[in-house]
Image (cartoon, rainbow, N blue to C red):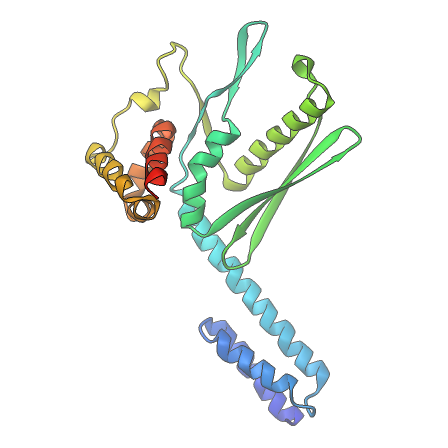
Length: 252
């Protein structure tokens, strides 16, 4: 292929990739050029770099679109964890287990996955959280804290506590999660006592019935149902949702 023809091919790759629907055709063109000994290597490298940049932009756009949609589905989380000092509750927080139980199905539905990397150095714990999208784009954040020595913890326990703390905070930061404290009369949360949207009770009964058909059927019904129903259930009664999933898992 002559250089003039390669210039045309470079322009073609840009046009094809910007359309976002002919990636296979683009890769086939690049593969043919690689096999051609007459192709100018520098221009071929430019073509490959251009293709990679376009794919990266497409992946970022897909990430942003799904992330924006997911924000409307992430509920406010109840702070069921307690920090007790001398027999008194000093503060409350959303437990990591509660956070993950609530957000995992929402992340999966929108094509996201959350992973963590932890390192320990000189008594400090650094937790790095990565939010990865199915199209390949990802964002990350990190949190560093010293080992938690409160409550007579030993070094290992203190490091584990700092790790859990970092995982909670990085998850909240990446997903813009909000939390609310429990009420003070021991009767549960105010949100739990609030009625659900119209038709919610019937929907929940249907979900419990679908659970008898197994996990696959349950998740299909869950992802196809109204977002406000899902938000209300995961925000006010995550334990009940956990029970429904466990019921489906026993069938599967």
